[in-house]
Every structure is written in C-alpha cells, then in structure tokens.
View 1 (cartoon, rainbow, N blue to C red):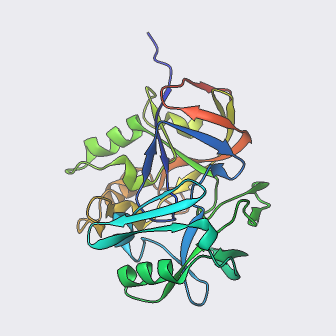
View 2 (spheres, helix red, strand yellow):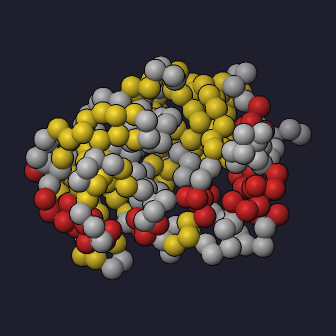
Length: 266
C-alpha cells in the first residue's frame, strides 16, 4: 500500500537565525508563516547578522505573538518587551541583494543582543507587512534569505543520516514545513502541492551553506563539517551548489495543522 505524504512538523523562526519554534498549527500568508522571521539583527551600517558568522544565535529562543516579544538564553537574563515600546524609526537594511527599510525596536533589546554577539547590533522589525517585494517570485518576503517558506522531508534527512557517522537534526536545515511518508528526495520532483486549503508553488531547490553545520543545541559549528561534507558527495549541482529542501511560494493561504495530508498537484 502506497503511503500518502503528511505534514509531520511546522517550524517558525520569529527572529532570523535564532532557534526554531515548533508549532502544531500555523497561519500561512503571502510572506510565509505568520510571525516568521519578522525580526532580524543588523549592524549599525544596516548589514544583516546571521548564525553563519555567529552560530550562538541559535541558542536564543524567541516568541512573538504580535504584541509581546519574549527572549531567553541559557547564559543571559530573559527579556520581554511590548511592541508598543518600539521606537519604529525607519532604518535602511537588506538581505543579500534586496535593499529595503525596516523599523527599529528598543535600546534595551539592542543592548541585550549586543552583549550576546559581542558587538553593537540593532534588532529590527519588519512591521505588519513586509516592504520587501521580490519580483523574481512575484511575492513579498520576510527577512528570510529569499523565499517565503522552506520544505524538507524526514526521508531525505534519514538518507543523509544513513550516509554519515553522526545523527543530524531537522532543525539544522531550518525548514518551515517537514513532510512524512514520502520517498527520499521525492520533493525534488514536486511542482505544486496542497496541504488542506493552502496551495504552494515548489519554486526552486534550496542551495545550502555553512548554516547546516551548526549544532542548534550547542550553538556551535560541527568541527567535522557535516552534513555539508556528505552532501557534497551526492547532492552537488553542475554549478557546485549543494541542495537540500525546496523553496515554496504561496499561491493560496490558510491554516496548516500537523497531521494533514499533502496532495501533489503537479
């Protein structure tokens, strides 16, 4: 009997590069999951800060309900700040080639993150609607690298783990949507999928970087360079990109719930 793929897990990242927040259900909007990557750290010149250079960011847990931001870290005092305290001054920033403006938050939050990073940074907020529009995919996008959402599968991760000495966690790959009961890398062949009332266009494979070598439980890069080293042996493209997961664009939004079936439309 052929198994039908199902939605195994949903992850949100309220602040770009901080720890994953597992969810049982989530609302999908044009920009991705509601409250996903609505915040980002930036240097004083506006350049963005991520766990690629500061892997310890993944030890920070952030929760944001649209009104209150709560931050915790094992080695620092927790902090909570109301959105109504944000300064909301427009600040020029960007992600990769995209340049846009976001809003400043509070001196208190900036100082908290600056102590952890070890250099002056600011916590920026996108606001209720992202000003960042990516014409190549015809969609507004949050502070995510380039797409509203990322999909991975349990079978594909199991395939990687079977080829390496260590066990790698799904959260190393920073997905929003995780699929169960599919063949390994079946998602590479999908073009459009439906989960409940939500329809996604599977737009492009995700080219991976050093971020996948960060152990999210320790906030440190693995010294053995895995799983990148293994992926290079069998998931490298002609352009030397290493692929794992698929980038999604939202065609029809709505609510997702863990356990829902996934219909492959194309």
